[in-house]
Image (cartoon, rainbow, N blue to C red):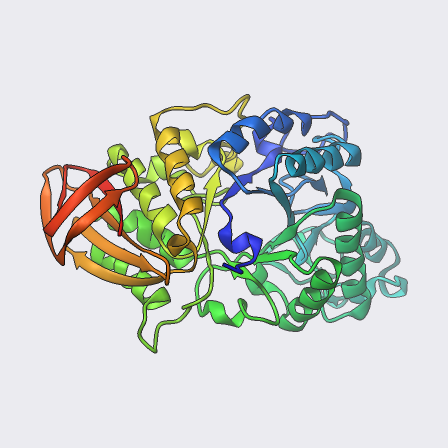
Length: 436
């Protein structure tokens, strides 16, 4: 299978400023908190993680998305040597690292923007932003500017300006040369100028041909971003919503409709052959353990995550079921974790990752629906080498699903043989991953 490394990988997302217990506001005191994450590496390797996605690590005013200096690790996390060492340790364990790149906007303390505030029309950086000198803003700057979605502390960059583009490309080269990173998550990629994304693609692939470009997108046609000229993948928020909603409303018709809409075999299906980035939670949404009405369904929703088409990603701490609601400046969904824990949910996820790695049909196989009720489903992933059925029952009662198959299979979660005689039996709130 000649898939790029990222299509075959399981990702693990960490929000470092939260995970290491850094203060929310930048106190500019250098504390080497990033070193804490080095202690997680053995457990992540044991779990089977292939690549770590680090949310913002560069100098910022508060949450990391209000950048001050793109080439300096935030002092709340340490220094550049700490990040370089961390990536090196991950590489030695066979895990890649990608960074969160915030290229749509900067913080108000970004030096070129401070220069505009000071020198106004005379600033050489005036056209780095979208400035209107005839207006005012909530900061009483006697000018106004475009920001990100009404957040005036996030100043939008002018990505059509060649100087800005060259500056950001230089940043990417610096990150590759200094830290040897393997890709980027592009924050709010849906806001980025398409021409900028095309040029970034060409530039990044010239640095490393297998450099991974992941875009944060919400809804709409993902093909406008995920194509040969722009991004390799994007966040699959359509299925994120469908996953938890289907479990909570006891309606598997919703999520299987999305699976078929995205990856089915009909001509009108949208993303066949593409690998979208899948998740059940991340740093912007509530923890899946806080969203699911029935916590016993956690192993089942993760079974679906690791067998659906696309690239699976875990969010730190959720592999053992921690909870977190939005609010309180998102501290509860981006908590300090002293060390990684391990429980029965982690065991299940480790087994699912092993299955994902061992069976190519879960990576490049096509998708089709085999059986479906409100509370139970079977869907198929199939390539030239193998056929896999993912079977899930979220009901409190057992179910027998009729199928048009009479043969022996292997149940991969238990590693046991199973005879299927035109019926798949599923116990209460259970799942099977069948190979034949």
